[in-house]
Image 1 (tube, rainbow over the protein chains, first blue to last red):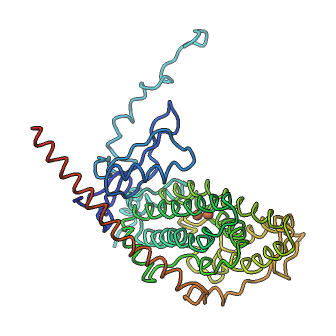
Image 2: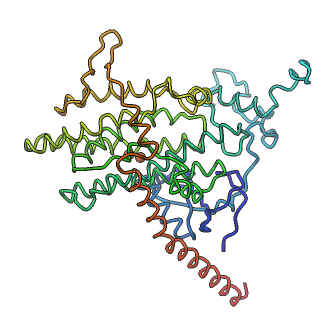
Length: 111
Length: 328
Ligand SMILES: [Fe+2]
Ligand SMILES: [Fe+2]
């Protein structure tokens, strides 16, 4: 049996699967070859295969994808919600990671 | 008592301030952000009601699935009903991000504790009703839903973007169906006019009571859940629809409908608000039937939900057994 999970990137809250015991899945679609899978939403399903079939019927009725991933929401580890979170601070002060940090004379070509 | 000095020192750090700042900056509130309890409660009520409307909304048209006049019309109607089921699911998923459970919402719907749009309590008497629902009811839904794509709550806004992409097909298939009937016999044209006469006023009521009687609107607008007032959206819908009615060759059943040169829009009569209140209170022509049908579908489907869980548990047990045998 599935245990109620404690939240995910999508839900964030402590709500569990539905009362019938169907866990929550997050759905990712690759819209075209050459693009990344993108999170499109979530759904409840009894097992992985059912989640995949339901994701096809729910999120790709009009050729929105060439590939689908489904993953149990409780399998996702998420950072804390606040976008000003110190978790992301290490990237804040490293201006030298950006190309515009460097002054190159105008007449140097192709750089 | 907090002194002015202290209060000034911490303003950007209270969750309230952060919430207000995100909303004011036209950014989105996401599920795990702090939000006022009343904001959460308002969204749960609105999104649940919206989800219920999509699900109940399959019934009036579903009435014609087995009697569509051609395979083409049947396939189209099936696809539309399937879309509406999908809309319901997107919205239930959005509501669940606020900490409620879909099963709980379904329970509230079938016990009458949560509402759905009053429009679905009217019967579909002829196949022309299918066309008029696509044209007017989905048309009004589009007017309501497009601004919701910019709602301050992220999951709701994203669900609305998906839904709006699909609604245009609904409206166009309805209008095309009506154009086909209007090119037919005199009896078919009368059938269209009769359907328009019955659905026009209930469609206008879909935008809710007039602004004067809509006390919660201002707060929803301040929270950027809602972007336009009920009356504003209703006017927009009438302005869009009148030329479409002319093109179709039907008369909208409102003697007060006339062009207002000054405003550059159409003036129209007042809907019968007592009728809307009656239907909301449960005294519309089909309220009991709609809920009975939904309850029966839910109860008849219980064994399927249970069987799926039992099957998943059995498969999981088999799998772990095999792994043990393989010494994994
Ligand atoms: Fe819909
Ligand atoms: Fe629709």
